[in-house]
Every structure is written in structure tokens, then in C-alpha cells.
Image (cartoon, rainbow over all chains, first blue to last red; front, side):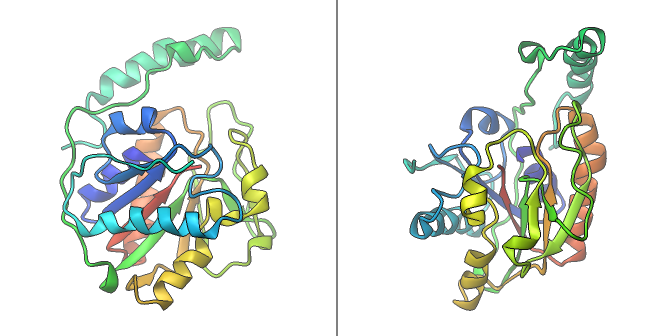
Length: 78
Length: 173
């Protein structure tokens, strides 16, 4: 996803992503990203926890209002 | 600014290492797989969320179970094609062709990977300008970065531009 984000950004489309896998994604240097401690297969939050999903979604989308590159944003969500 | 710096070196390493190993032995040696990395960030301008169109891009392998071919989830070298489906698709019409993550969570609550209803809500609350009418979907097991760069990424960029997106939310599985 990090490479796709870079490609879109270079064409003028602002990008943001969220990932549970900072180890693999940070070195690619996507323009804007949040990182959590959530599990693979549940990137936006625990099943049924709509509040958590919405919290991570809003925080990730909010990055779009800032110019890139941004430093990685880490959330203790798990 | 490049999507992937030192692409030629990455390709050489991939073909002589991980790929050659698999072709010769049928075994995957992930210790020989070089993860892509970059030294330089890319720059871009921020956008006003309340007046912008946002497109959702998912690598969960989602496809329309009755209308689209599933991704080739079992292929050892991945699937580099994309699908698009309407944002308002009922979740019971979406299946997931991807063998590299546990589907327990997404089967219990699809919004853990496809936040379609959350995005509808954010649009209705005028938190977002609007959400692009189609979701861009692919299967995120794509070990050949050259094919990702040459096939998947151009298709995604074209689809996002065709929908008039100013911003993109990327959700990996």
C-alpha cells in the first residue's frame, strides 16, 4: 500500500493509510499514515467495535488536511 | 521523487533470489525476499476534507461474488488485477479472495477492512465532501513489485482519476 500511496500522491491525489504493520510500511515512506497494534485482517479495529473503527478512520482521514510528508503517527489501539 | 527508488536493483535481487529459489525448488525462502524501501519521502499538498471527494482503496481481495471473477488467491506469484464495486454494495454481496490473512474478523464485521457504512456516515455528517461511488479493490499478495508498479498501480491511478478523487484512503488487510 505504501508504494500505491506514493504513486497516487505523485499524480496529485492526496493519500492516507492506516496499517497494523509499521515494520514493513514505514520503510517505504508513504506520504501520510497511522500505525496501530491491531491484528492482521482487522486493520480498522476489532469486529463490532464501531467506536474504535470510527476513531481510527477519523484520525487517519484527518491527516489528509496536512501537507505531506508527515512523520508516522502511532496509535496504541489494539 | 520516485515510487520505488533503485527499482532495477530490487528487480535483480528478486529475480536472482526469491523467484529463482522458488522456480528451482518450489519452496519459498522469505529470507531472500527484499522488502521495498525508500530513502526519500514524496511531497504533496493537503486537501480540505469537507469539500473533497475521497476514494477507498482496499487490498482485502474483495469482489462481487455474483458478478465478478475472484482474484487468483492461490497463485504463488500473486494477482495484479483490480476490481471496482459500488460503495453502496450490501456486504453479503462481497466475498474475499485472499489467502494471506485470517478472514474471521472480516466475516464477523466487514467494516474492519471495508468501512463502507462509516464512510457513508462521514459523508452524511458533512465531515467529508463525498465518497467516490466505486471502491477500488485488489488482492494484496503481490510479491513481484515490478508487476505492482507496471500493472496494478497504473490501473488504480486511472480508476481514482476517472472518479475525480482528490484524496485516497488506503486500507491494507
